[in-house]
Structure formats: C-alpha cells, structure tokens
Length: 402
Image (tube, rainbow, N blue to C red; front, side, top):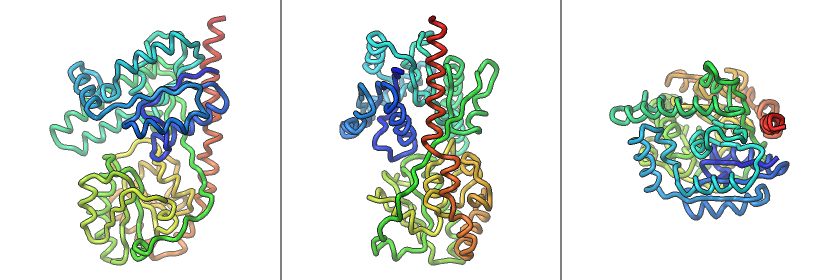
C-alpha cells in the first residue's frame, strides 16, 4: 500500500503518549508499506528529529509552527465558530503541501492521526480515510470545563461542543474510525456512524533494572512516583490532588514517604508543589526507569483522563504496584486487587498507598504485571489489527473502482 500519514506532532522521539503511539504505528507500517509522513514540529530542533524516521518513510514533510502562529490560528477559529484545536494546527502552507501530494501521487489510503489533522483532507475525496482519533478529545475538553472557572470554563465547554461535532462528521466520513479503548468507542456511537474500531496501545518490556539511584534521591526512599509531561493539565491536576489532599494523610502514618514528580516542563503550579513537605519535583531526568525500578508505588490520581495512560502500562511492565483512580484503570481493563488498586477519593487513595507500604505480601501480588501487558498490550498484535483495517479500507476502494 501507499499510505499518506498525517500527524499533528512529529512522532519522534517517542517520549510522551501521543508520540509513542504514532511512532509505533509509523514504524510498523513503514516496515511493510510505502509511507509518506506529513506532520508539525514545535521547534527547529524538534523538526531535525525527522532523520530518525527516514528508515520508515519514503518522504517526510515537517512544518515548524511557532506559538504565536498557533495562538493566532486558534483565535481565527474562534471567530469562525470552528474548534480551537483545528485552528491551533491550521496552516495554509501545510494545506498546499497536502494538495500537492494528493495531485502528484496515487495513495491507497490516508491515515489521519488525531482529529485536528482531518481539516487537511478534502471531503468527498475518492481515497479512503482511516481516522485514528486516539482519544475523544471533545470529552477531555468537557472535563476541563467541569474543573475550571469562568471564563476558561466557557472556552473549554465551547471547544467540547464544536470539536464533538467535528469528530462526529469525520467518524461518518471515514472508512474506519479508530480509538484506544472501548470506553472511547462508546463516546462516538450514534445514528449513521459505522462501528468504531479499537486499537489499543502497547508497551515495551524493560530489558532489565535500571542503574542505582543517585544518593540524593536514594535518601528520599521510600517514595511514591508520578511520571509525565508536567505542563499537561490532566497531569498537573493529578499531582496537585495527590500532593495537597492525599500525601498529607499518608504522611500522618508514614512521615518517611516522599512523593516524586518526574517529568519535563514542570508548570509554575507544579514547581510550587515542591515546597510542600515530602514533595520533590525533579523535572526531566536522563533515565526514568531508574526511578520506576526503585519506587514503592506508582500513583495515578487522575481526575481528568481520556484513553489509555501509558504510565500505567509502563509501571505494570516494570512489575510495580499501582494505585489509580477508576477511569484510567478501566481503560486498561485493570481489576482492583488483581491488576492494581483503585481508589476515587482522597481517603481511600491514601489508605491504598499505606496498605502497600505496610504489607509486602500485597505488593508481591502485583509483581506479575508484565504478563498482563504481554497478553493485552502487545504492539505487534495491536498494530496487526491496524494494518488489517488499512488494507480492508484500501481494498474496498479498489474493488469499487474495478
């Protein structure tokens, strides 16, 4: 197949959720088919990462967009009554490149990664489109609205409504629509919408334990761990919830416990959390696996969440005990007491962490997470399903032409 692959962010390095999935999809398809990648980058340095993708692509086009252009595009979308997300990734230059590619090449299928990139596909095009929504972003904006105050809540609610309409339009127009979980699929069900396909994420099993911790961090053991990009609102809200409402309850019984927030770009709010007793904000670290291998527990106290949280899969692959709120646990099919511990209020969440600190046998119960992810989150198995859908879409189009 000849595949036109559109992505809202360059899928390299695969160091955050949206890039991890896109990278593995690109790598898998590029090894078997001819792929042309068109995507955006946030900086020239990020755009230069395309050299790492050349083995998987026949052609790569990366356009760098400044923050000013993103904000300007979003503002223009606001005036036009369109989703801000689309305006954030809008570009007349990018549109011209896509139209040039469609005019000069015969593609068997167009693979669109993230709803914001659908704006570049002319409606009614003869080439079949397979849309990977990943998560239903409109539902995430709705959650943002519920956890915010005016005027931000108004902006978020507007985005939820306009983006939901946009997602529905493209769910109807696509040959296949893909999401990461059954819960996401339920959000897209509606009259006239074809069945939504689920292609789960995967996880790579660590080759071995990381090296020893630096002495400055070793002194903080035992510690609960949260790993993520720390300027992303769901992550910021999660660590603030844990640091402010859950950790003090735990430290009443276990004052030795620290909470490590590990990840790039800590926001101002996250930096301020580092002033609280027991909270350590590391920023970016060279080897996350070192922290993962040496933590007492991984915590996922999400109050805003859509789709699969890769950090849960990575913790399971490292055989670490997890305490999570119910949404992320349900997304991976995790069962309380078998796969991980689930708690949805501050008291129960704190008690679950205390139980792990005080009961080694309970921790041992979760030492076989690697088998769970091997069975359910194999990149190879899940991407085989993706390839089948693309082949089916391309085949249906060819059969119609004949």
